[in-house]
Image (cartoon, rainbow, N blue to C red):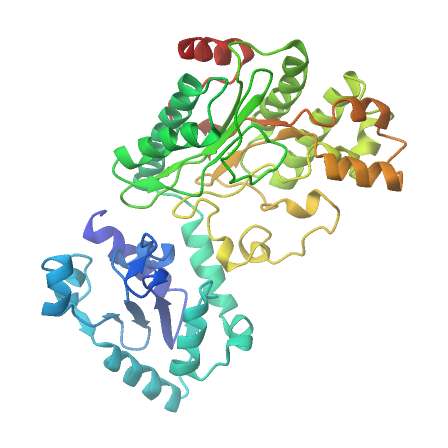
Length: 463
């Protein structure tokens, strides 16, 4: 945990944004995997952790703006629980460590909310992302599940979002811990993968490193020879000579701050000439994105400059043609780069996306509907204290290629005959975690091999 004052100061800062009512926060519950007592690993809600710190299930919190009091509600564990779990402190004992004096049972919470509703006091809450919370809101506030999203407080979303989006020094230090473990995870993959192995063996070694660090993974590991599938969580392929291996993986620290890196390397000791050409296009785009980062610049413009670098590189190799600016405006580059450049990162690996991208990433503005650009998760001016990922790539997605070719989509910019020859190439990307500073940016963590020479140097340790 951070210092007690950190949590007190966070709560006080939030409360100053409101003149009355209750701010109501859900902690997460255990999630049964196959029967009631067989759980998935517990993960506390990130906003609950941010303001209240308690990392145990079945808790709720209230900030009473009118009375100036903060509450934690939850039932204490019983002797039956101790038999299975060992002794657990009471809710009151745990809450004091985070500067919270007022606690109560779940019945006390229900009574407080009922009284507030009778008094017509505002009760503000964030959009729930777990279905059980929608059911509980029905019981507690009489909001039917289908109306929960419309009933969430936009005012609270904005206040929490603008506070959490700027990372403090202690948060940055925690994220950097996660990034350093991420680097170790990727090095292990580079030193492990060999022709004839299953993807699962590489993935398991990577996961082991996250567990060894004392935390866990921050998202399901992508470890695949089919990097063209952007979120590929299948690990059953046998890796073979001539393949590229794409790893996207990161851990959570004990305080649940995330790391998130991607790397691509040859299954052999060295890249083929064709692999080098495509890899370098993606790497040049990555460096172009970094060069464009600075406070005040809209991340949408950084994304578009990166898209132009992809298009320029693919034109040089003969995959694209025509005017590069016109091609990017038409979205033709998205045949190879169909996703956004990056995302916010912090307590969530995709920070605060449960609030709605339009609220946090777009400051209330609508998203583009253009293929590729609509997947951009962040499109607002950058500020010092933002932590973001930079992860452009080049992908050859057979189904997408077939569809565009059949439709003659963007045919004035795409050399489909050339693309057809590479249809089963796969995909490549590098990803780094970056802090926006007053002067520009800083890549977090120790370096991870990304140039062709450095990647091949790491790969030599596997053979």
